[in-house]
Length: 311
Image (tube, rainbow, N blue to C red; front, top):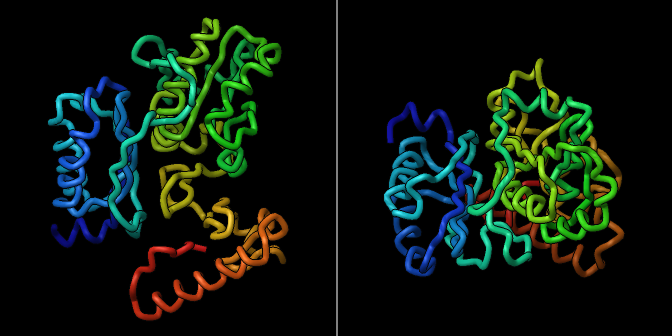
């Protein structure tokens, strides 16, 4: 590791690959060992349908890790997107076995058999500006709340499991010939578009590489994106150019909070915010307050506390 790489902070790689994995459990330990040897931190999910997750480390270590992952026959065509973080955005490395690498909970939805048409970031603006296109944000409500595309429909789902039910309840409202869908890094849309095709929608499109690729490649002065993009690590959000955004997570409810939210009377660092002050019990608030005290004490000792709320 050279000093130049250290000064750049950490490279963050969001990765996934839908593929057939005969025995995910047999890959769990070798992948964990690969990441540990390279001082990589983050979270990876393994299932019979593939791999998904986000990892962080120095630039060289991340590139070595990706190279190592692609040596597994199942992951030779692994997709990944890169961004940067000034601080390590994860506390540990986890490789977990799951039933699905992105949980929809519907049997028979297979992106390897049928999926929407990929649209590169450079062509996305034209598609979503077409009056014959309905644009659907497949992310959850707390993600949509801090940023989305012009004119996008917000399903207001609490989890991706809710998306099929939303489609069923809103079939009549999806009344344009073209359906354009997007998500953070592209993986949710693999399943969402496969599901839409299964439901009989013909012209289904999705943003290739997701919002992250769009924010990386499309200049801000040409962008139809407004706000910030929620990410599932300690950065909380990123902006155009994939620079770190201003949001922090509420420790009480894990909702992303803007700078304006931090000024509200309901906000108490490490304890609660306007989303959860009245919806959580006093005992829950007291536990959060005690945990936050331990975080502050660890920071004074220049230690990293596992429960650091980042806000």
